[in-house]
Amino acid sequence: MSLRIYNTLSRALEAFSPLETGHVRMYVCGMTVYDLCHLGHARSMVAFDVVQRWLRASGMRVTYVRNITDIDDKIIKRAVENGETIRSLTDRMIDALHQDADALGIERPTHEPRATDYVPQMLKMIGTLQDKGLAYQAGNGDVNFAVRKFPGYGKLSGKSLDELQAGERVAVQDGKTDPFDFVLWKSSKPEEPSDVKWQSPFGEGRPGWHIECSAMGCEMLGESFDIHGGGADLQFPHHENEIAQSEGATGKPFAQTWMHNGFINVDNEKMSKSLGNFFTIRDVLKEYDAETVRFFVVRSHYRSPLNYSDVHLDDARNALKRLYTALSLVTPVAVQIDWSEPHAARFKAAMDEDFGTPEAVAVLFELAGEVNRTQSPAVAGLLKALGACLGLLQDDPQKFLQAGAAGVDAAAIEAQIAARATAKAEKNWEQADRIRKALLEQGIVLKDSSAGTTWEAAQ
Image (cartoon, rainbow, N blue to C red):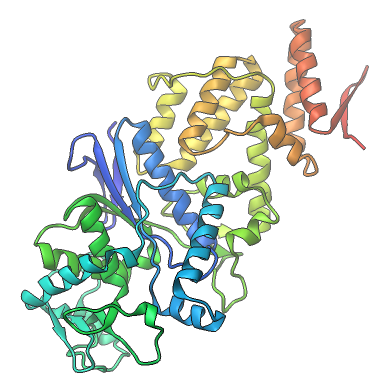
């Protein structure tokens, strides 16, 4: 089966075929670096890390661009509050972003452009839009995009201008000819710091948010590319506006496939600072190891809402321990995945159906069961190799299990006791001793008696 991806633009699953055979060009909206990354950022970064891993595992070359927004109203406000320069703040936050992403096992994108390095490309696109009558300069100096002059506006979000008009709450202001017009170039204000002001044909100012991604995407991937991704909250207006200004400027489809990951909820309520249920990645990593957080994200489908709670993180930790416990019983041999092998074939079918990670993770547990029963180094190797496609199971099993020995998973221990009993019945004393030793290294002591085997945590 060939890869199918749910395309937000068409609202349907579509067979995926890159514009250039064997080469996928993907752009994902990155972070606005005025603060530490939060769980929503983690969800998006992990989701698209899995996408690019699977595309590569499928034999494709991937050029993956994830931008950094390093000029924005929030950045300016925070830098002024801190009494530091824009560059000092953004450099510090980019370093923190990389630390958090590295901890979660997220591979660096091919390119990570900073918006401030692409202002000339933004100005060129704005000039093209003005020449085509799709942009105008208002009396206050801002340059705005004329939404009603772009016939396809609303095709991504499914929102028509008539529907938006019915719910209109914003009055026409700042010289806009229509409340739905959005800013492409912001005229400088006297009170703004000097390091956020660029000279342009439209006067001194700085770019609007939406034009940044259009200019960087076109510059780094071409005027049309394969996949554009981001969180569901970016679908409107950010991605809708990207389409309008990009396609308005080039006359070509901006991206063939649009992908959006679902929201993060906290105890079934949307995560937000106002509700006090807002968590940074670093908050969570104080309580849970990074691979558990990654596994928690991966085992849910990227388009589904993800409910964060300690209960769900604890469950993810215990589930991941069961996989690592299987790998601790035998030394995996390095394998090249044979996609015709039944487990690998089911894994591939799941991932080829819109990156179906829940079903793919289920295959990992099937393989773990096989390892428990057969103690096969080759099966363990396949488990580890398939886990790598999701960015999982690459740590040393004993190290992982020892780090989490305080949180005992009774079901996993009982499974290993049963595997040991099978090994003893088959007079495989070496394997039985190996299981006992593996459990002891996890802080679990076995006690054999005529009534059977019991266990307790080492003191």
